[in-house]
Amino acid sequence: MLGAQDQNGKNHGGLFRDFQNRNVKKMWPLVMLITIILLVMIFMISSYSRVKKVTVSGNEIVSDQQIKAFSPVKKGTSLFAVWGKTDKLAQSLKQRSRRMQSVKMKLVNFNQVKIKVEEYPTIGYLFVHGGYQPILKSGVIIKGKVLNPKAGFPVLKKFQNPKKLRRTIKQYRRISPPVRAVMNTISFSPTKSNPDRIFIQMSDGNKVYASISTFGDKMDYYPSISSKLKVKSVINLEVGAYSYPIPQKQTSTKTTSVQGY
Image (tube, rainbow, N blue to C red):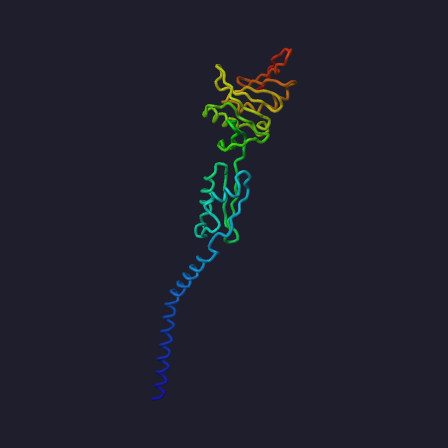
């Protein structure tokens, strides 16, 4: 009888342990879920769940402060709003300023955001009352004025018609940078025979007349043309290409054809 009781006791103990093990196995996923939820909640209220620092690089005109103000990601922004969304957030930032050609954003050191900006360079200035408005490589004219334009960029003058101004900028962007660098001013100078005529004052003293519709291509011939001139001259690119010396007091002038252009 004692042996039977001992055996029954062992059987009951084994069944109880099996029952406990089965319950633990069933409860384990729930325990893990509760643990994960608690860890997530602790992470969310901690400083590690938020952007610790935002740094900006690559900008020259737009200040760090402006970019940070424009940025949808700031110090303290939840990382849940950043993870997997950096490209979309960078595009949103780019649209805030017409000076930004490209914007890249990435997370570094887990909770720090790095913003790299590439700006459209200035390629000229539009003279307006009270200052000069920068013209960007994209063709956009920045409304903010500067008092002193940088050297090496031409100033566009006397353009009252917005359409002609846009056409002129479009053609100007076609000119190679070395030629653009020696153009001082581009002035709208229409005549009855050519309502699209422009006048270009060069930094080497030569003067150029051209048409809005074609000067973007013809101006790249300027270095070859000017190298053949012995005196400061007027170069006419309206139809074909020819030049004549700039008239001087008590000096006769003579027209010289420029062949091959």
